[in-house]
Image (tube, rainbow, N blue to C red; front, side):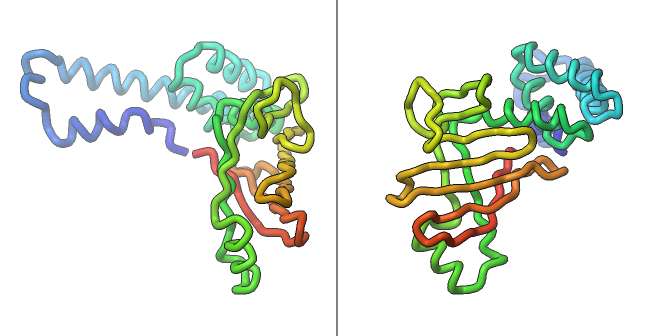
Length: 207
């Protein structure tokens, strides 16, 4: 979990020392106080999202997304994906996917023998990136084609903590995949080459 990632550039700047003119224009004591205050607020929100009160966690998640604040949204999604409550994790999974413009599938080459590794290289390579188009919340569907309706054979479908991907026509023969969200907030599963029926372990990482 890395809830304070947006603050790292500022922390680095402070570690390297003030830029010319900072002493005259910035109250560093007040700035540090504000950073400490914000950090404490993020910690409180993450604690609620990953706490045992599921109703409070869901309410916090909704409020953070409705705020429209980019940092609050990122914190909500990251904490929600690895929360203890399965309802919140399912909500976070859909929201995380619908906020993305593309999906990157990373294959686990380390678990493959040389024959399967070569078959993977010839078919797709280590990483497959799929562009995401329209999202249909009522059907929990994200299109892999530029259509105004959910296209079953070219889409990402979400059901609870599971994700099914079907992309007919990918590399001529298509691509099928099934993933499930693990406790760390990573989608893990298998990708199938429909032409050869070969399957390959893979993951989708949100961070």
